[in-house]
Image (cartoon, rainbow, N blue to C red; front, side):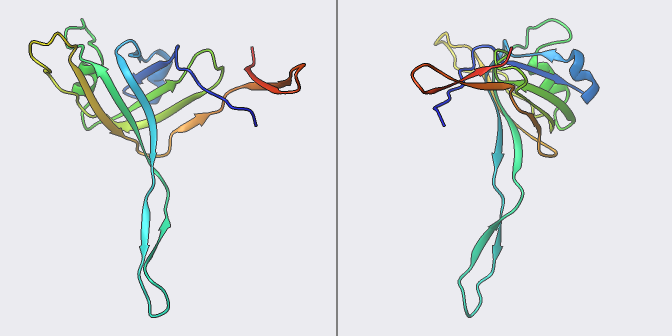
Length: 164
C-alpha cells in the first residue's frame, strides 16, 4: 500500500440541535482550530484466578468530538460556536465533520452532548482567546468512507486520488 497523507486544508464542521438540522446546520469551521472525532478504548478487567493473573478484554470504544475553537462571543445572532455550546451545554446535539472537501464522501456524523467553552484567556499578550471542550458522543459516529480510486503510474507505483 502506498503512503497516504490527508492534508486538512478545506474542512467543514456543522452543528445543529437535531439530525435534520444538519442539512442547514450552523457552519463553524472558520472558528475551529482543531476538530477530531476520537475513539477511546474501554477495557473490562477479567479477575485473576489460581491459574492466571488478571487481564483485560476490550469492550466497545467510547467516542467524542474534541474541539478547540477561537472564542466568538461577539458573533451576532444566532451567535457563534461559543454561544451554541453554551446554549446547548449538557444537551444532545448533532455534528457533521468533513475533514477535507477535496476528498469526496469522507465525513463523520455524530450525536453528542454539547459542552461549553470558556470566557477569557491570556491577558496582555495579544493572543486570541480559545476554548477547548470534549463533547462525548451518545454512540459510535457514522463514518462515510471517501470515494477514491487507485491507478498505476508509468513508474509502476500506485497513486491514490479522490474520484471526481
